[in-house]
Each structure stands twice: as structure tokens, then as C-alpha cells.
Image 1 (cartoon, helix red, strand yellow):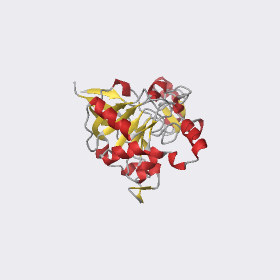
Image 2 (tube, helix red, strand yellow; image 1 turned 60 degrees about the vertical axis):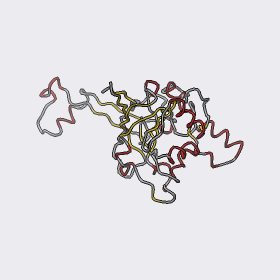
Image 3 (spheres, helix red, strand yellow; image 1 turned 90 degrees about the vertical axis):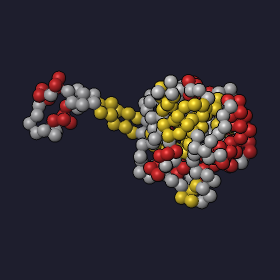
Image 4 (cartoon, one colour; image 1 turned 90 degrees about the horizontal axis):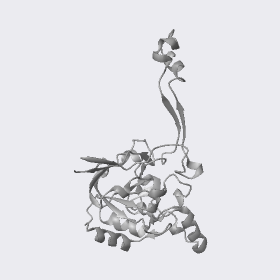
Length: 256
């Protein structure tokens, strides 16, 4: 069995998110935390500890959508499946999160392009894959190569409502992208909105969950190293009670 890491690190100091949503991480090193250890053992001195060292620990000020994560239907809207209460990340069925994967290569599509159902069907035909219920569909965009750069959140194509519903109608319940969002980057959508004033184009791929609830992975990595199909995806989310998303160490498993 070969493992391919599909996750980006949870780290500060890179352009992984819009400024208002960037994570902050304070690293406390061994030489800083001896007092923390000493507080548990009255009378213990720093020199009693090996090298005078405590432990290393990190203090995080983060959002549940930092790093590679799985969105719950609750993130998309308060309802799913035509009016039912949307499930939160701790309620996502685990069997959705360990399934055969398929990769759609849309790296050639321009930034801001909204992928259609016809384009999804054509790509599946090109790679010779018949979509099955619960397949995990991963979309490889131009954003993957741009991760960490200033233009990352503006890069890559996005999945439209039509394309998303086409997948959901065929039984897909988990999808993923190496871009910041499953939808087209907001920079490009905002330009279309300014021209059309049509609110239905805003977050249209996410909002497809109102009709059929589903999850998607965002900020994936290394999708370009995957075969088109013939691998398994594991993407179990952190169990954040009532949360809209959960961090995941997404991994592809391939038989050697």
C-alpha cells in the first residue's frame, strides 16, 4: 500500500486564506515551558528537569476552515435535502469519508471558470471512469500549484451548481478541490455579480447542498500526483461538536 498526502500543513505566515481568516499559531518551546511543568509538582525546580526543559506546545487562534478541511452541509446553509436540518461535521456519516476516489483534471481551465455538468461528463469519459455512488470526486485545478502564493485564493476554476447537482444525482456525497473554495474564486464571481446582479451565482456550488446534502474537501494538495482513478480516499474530519467543518489529514491509498 502506498500513501499520498493530500493535505496542506496548518501553518501561519502563508497566503492560505483571505486576511480576515488567516490562522495564528504561537509556538512555545521547551525552554519556555518549564514553569508549566513545575506548576504541577510543588517544589520542583527547573534544574531538576532534563536540560531544564519543559514541553513543546502550540497555542492556536484558528478557524475551522483553515488548512485542509471537510465542509459539512451545515456550512453551506441551515437546511439540506429540500428543507431538512443540515447536518454538522460531527454528524457526517463516516462511511462517506473512506471511499474510492476519482480525479478530474481541470488545470487547463481559466481562473474563475464555472465548470458545467457537460464538462464533468466529458472528463469522466476521457479518463474512462463510470461514476459510482459514494465515489469521492477530487477536482485538480490551477490553484494547487499556486498554494501559498499571493494569488492562491483567486486562482483556479470552480464547480457550479449544475455540475455539483449532476454529481450528487449519481450518488456522490464527498467531493474535493485543491482550491480555496469549491466554487469559483470570489474575485471573479464578484465581477460577474456586478454585471448581472444575479444572486444565484454566489456560492452556487455550495448551495447545491440545499437540494442534496453533501460534503466537500478544500485546500487539498498533491492532486497532480494521483492517477485518474484506482485509489481510495480517507478524509475523516475532526469531531467538532456542532461545527461547520473539521480539519482532516486527507490521504490517498494506492495498491502497489
